[in-house]
Image 1 (cartoon, rainbow, N blue to C red):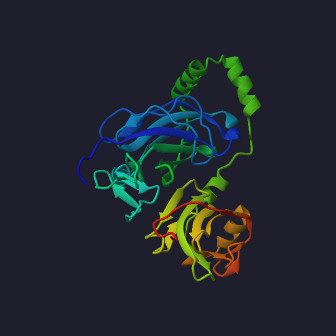
Image 2: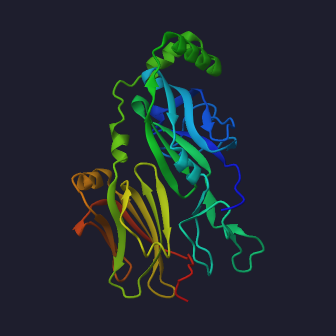
Image 3: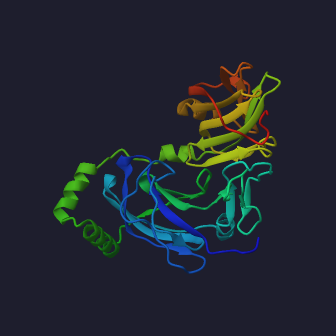
Amino acid sequence: MKNEKIPEWTAEMCHPANKYSVDMVKDEIITLEGIHAGMPYGSSSGTWGDSGKMWTKQHGTPIGADITYYAGYNNTFYRLKIDFPVEKMKDLVRRNYASREVKNKTIEEYKYEGDRDLQYIMGDADAAYKSYDNMSSLVFGFAPKGMVVVWVNYGLTVIEIGRYQAKVITDPKELESAKNKHLATWRFTPEYFDELAKKLHNPNTNCALWDMFRLRYNWKPVFISDNPKFRLFEVNSEYYNGERNQMFRPWLLENKIRDRALPSVFQFFWETGKGEKFEGRIFFNQDEIFNRFKNLTGDNEIQVKIASNNGDLEVMLNNEKLKVDSIRIYPSDREFNDSYK
């Protein structure tokens, strides 16, 4: 764990839908090293957990934020002044999460900056490729009613830091200052600002849905088949709360019950013999999965049983059929260390 360096990342602003877009007014991301860091210029974008945009590189270990933003859909200026858990952030910025398997080597879920073997040369390639990804961005998600969720993004792995509550600015001087800066930034006249506020007004906003997405349960995914040659190699999961992760061998085979949000998508790869390579995707039904988990306690399993001929699969929750929106199976050309030769 030597050769530590100053973390480098970008900041992102996302929202659940375009109608909930917010505009940044004042910003400061506080770093452990005292290096100034800030938010992107302009408005939020993308989807929940992913803005779809990158910005100028920021530096340092983020340990808090002090930002003011404007939500046009309810004509409100908010201030978010928060601290992140320092030890957790010091740990997260040094992690490098696995993003692809390494030929003839065992890959780990994550390694720390400074560890050996963060890059490998594959086969006859002339240059090393990245098999682990470091922190690429700090993502702020703005839901209605001042709800803000923050994630650390490693590319194919996204981890939630926490859920925070911004406060409505009511102090007359602070409110006037925020509004004047907003008008100057966007070159709005007061008249146009009022006109736009009426146009964007949405009286029915609340954050209940995105708070529901954050519910966590003790569960694990289980993939099985009656085909005796079945081998599972990789599972990629997307969650309703904006998180993502990947599992490779060997820790995929040691898959344990964890405290997790509920999944929106599974993508997975398996083989049942030489030339029998497959990719599967499951798109979960939001209402079904939340209703089924609603009163569950203890340890649970989302089970995926693949037909022995690889032509179909069924999804179950604790051995009872779970309705999903879509199931897809494709032929694959992916090669893994333990592939059939």
